[in-house]
Amino acid sequence: MRVPQVLGSPAGLAGVVAVLSVLVAVLLALLGAYGTWSVAADGWQALGKVVTAVSCADAGRAEEVEFERDGVPERAELDACGHREGEEVVLTITDDGVHLGDARHGAATDARMLGGVLAVFAGMAGAGFAALYRRPAAS
Image (cartoon, rainbow, N blue to C red; front, side):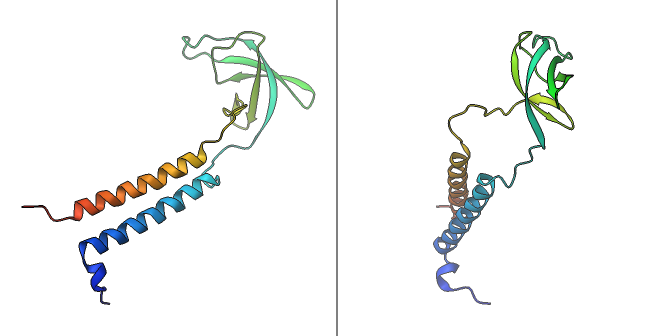
């Protein structure tokens, strides 16, 4: 297969690399923006109360929380620190433990689209680097 003369030149090749790199960046950004990469564990949320508070300086200790599951009070270790006893916290209960609720709880904006835009610019920067790297050195 013959390569057209335009693509055989360094400028044409750099243009093709730039276009392909932007397309790949846009595709990856869209996959991430639509949550295809999300690996969130299945769980349910509940409102809990901190029973045993632990300072964040105490490594190795875990806080204890109390919540209701199907109307029955239940206690569990919480993988967090720095709360006060009696403080109410939003919990996510999964098969592998009890965690604090969604970190974006109450957030007003979603930054996934900004991440997509930044990924596109990263692809363009990579294409520019490839073009500069392939350019013959000036004598």
